Amino acid sequence: MKIAVIGYGGMGTFHTECLKQYAKTGSEPLTLAGIYDIDASREKAAEANGLYAYRSADELLSDKSVGAVIIATPNDVHAEYVKAAAEAGKHVVSEKPIGLSLRQAEEMYGYAEKAGIVFEVHQNRRWDDDFLTVKNIYDHAGYIGDVYRLESRVMGGNGIPGDWRKKAAHGGGMMLDWGVHLIDQMLQMVKSSVSSLYCEYSYIYGEEVEDGCRLSVKFENGVEYFVTVSTDCFRPLPRWQVYGTEGTATVAGWDLSGGMTRAIVRHDDNIAGIRAGNGFTRTMAPRIGDTVEEKVLPVVHAEPFAFYKNFAAACAGKEPAAIKKEEVLRVFRLMEAAARSAKENIVIKEKI
Ligand SMILES: NC(=O)c1ccc[n+]([C@@H]2O[C@H](COP(=O)([O-])OP(=O)(O)OC[C@H]3O[C@@H](n4cnc5c(N)ncnc54)[C@H](O)[C@@H]3O)[C@@H](O)[C@H]2O)c1
Image 1 (tube, helix red, strand yellow):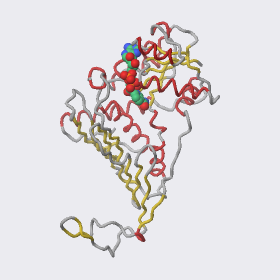
Image 2: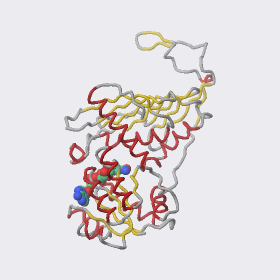
Image 3: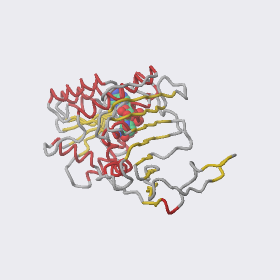
């Protein structure tokens, strides 16, 4: 099947590079047909990279040889292209977030269902090795016991990049940008209903949209989950900190550095106190070596090109699509509850 990319910016370029690599693997075939971008300078960049640049979206969508389209435009432009591509009978991948609201997301699935096409949102971070490694720890109590609290964070120091990401009308803001990934990962990991949440947005850079967010979620199974997205931090904290009944795991970053500390004795009755600052403490003294043990992370690597492979197989009717409508809508329900919490400074007690 031939596939084309609409929007040849940062992510559109990433897709084309991945698709070129994927084509070399010889698995479920997807051939890159070309790109369309509204900006002529991006057309030239595509041609310089050896890609065919369609002169209009109509030219692309009326190309009968194209079976599928990836939409990698700013967030406010996903819906119109999903509708047009579905009506043209193409299978569609929309970049995340699917759209600007739960209502729009539902409408977009409506176009896809009416046209009978495969429609997926690119929640690619389900295949991030750091996430899969944490999920492995969460799923197997043998590593650090039963996990009862997780901290998932991404901390940049570049402010909000580019132009459209700073504007509400284009679907800017860090909740729709990164929150959507971290919340999707959270709901893939914790198989329980959300019972309550609280969220705060930050506006350090004075933009009209949030440049960061801090979300805390309680699940019915007792798990607490904290999501942090920031763009104002020059000394980031670890990507993941995971607390279990028998230990703690740290996945420091996408490089999978970190480790697990397991408690051999949960309560150390012979704690040697330490001087700390202008005082003395037993409570905060570091653990002595023989009461804990250090373990390497049980690293999990994703299958290369898993998203594209599954999408191609789904279009061929061989596999169900990995990213499901109900999952995408649930992420949106949660994001909208978080936005309400941030706006009104309230805890939302809703089953999600
Ligand atoms: N899944 C991921 O890992 C990931 C990472 C980054 C971005 N994204 C998503 O990808 C999308 C694009 O983000 P980006 O960082 O590439 O932005 P970008 O600004 O780098 O690129 C967007 C491109 O779309 C083009 N464009 C704008 N309006 C258009 C229109 N009407 N028709 C055709 N082209 C149009 C622009 O000219 C630009 O080249 C966003 O939805 C973003 O959330 C996803």
